[in-house]
Length: 476
Image 1 (cartoon, rainbow, N blue to C red):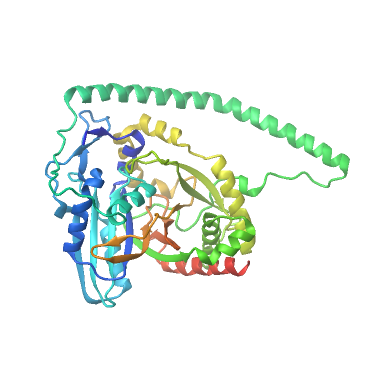
Image 2: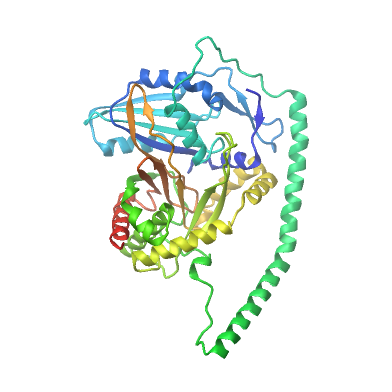
């Protein structure tokens, strides 16, 4: 496959690999029976031609400020990417979870293609697990779902006589051409950001003036009509400074993880009655759980927490690889008492956030292009060394994400069904808690990841999330 250069946005995810964080995406798939290593090996081997990115590795740029390339690995060995752990035949869910957490904390080897699979056996009940991780510079959440669909959701059409031959990588002329292109992109991105900065102030003044005139006109109209007050901007449309919480501080490398399935059918009547979506239910239930957790820890805030919400912009024509997302900030109704209030707030807040994304994909690409992966990596490491997150609050408290379900169930080996797929949410310095959901046929599989030095027991958050979801259903 022809060598391709990482986009500036994709390359920026390499900076997440530090001594306290990892840059890969991890998913735990629960199997209804144990699978042998040979079964998994032959299944992946038979599907590799459907996912050529699995045989591609990073090649460093010729200049330190440049972006890496994806090139075919001439020394690719499937055995390097598959690991098997036997827990002895008497293991329970806690032991499996501990092994998955241990595996998720290990950095991927950048001298090889950036993915690994861990097959777990030896469970007391005869079930198994498959833990997959692939670097975020290669795929986003939807891209990983599509990749797993190619491996475990399709029949192989492998031609046994077809041999894979690695491409030789980019030539000297190609690298020079791309260096010129990179410099042009960096200059263009810098000019766009500067133009935004120059125009932002007058635009903000104009908007403030327009809003003031509108409010005065509305107030005059209401005064004439006898109204008592002027309606303020709704709370769900305001994204202020995030309040301080116990999990918003400098993180360490210690991790804890909990998961739960959220049945889709359970909330169907509620969603029909309120016009809400499954994602609205997730946001409202998360808010209810965090409200209760903060109250239990004497840390309940009067202002809503702020969630960073990734949103896919991947169209039908996009390939599996690369990141196709934009980010938005959305208030979480942790300040509201009742489940129905939280659901109504979450529905309005998400509608507003989708219409006005905080960080459109073009802005993130421009920022990444100007900084470059090397500078971004150095800044990230420097911030962690001085524990900057203890003194400077991020613009959000946590990440809440939701990846839609694949078209069909996954099958591993010779007929083992995947009965749940739970993400291990990524963390970053200053954000010691994340809640991520992976859709799967019939359920929304939720993973709750935390820095255990800041939030030691995500299983308590999991229990509160289950209760908050039940309270929402009961409110219908």
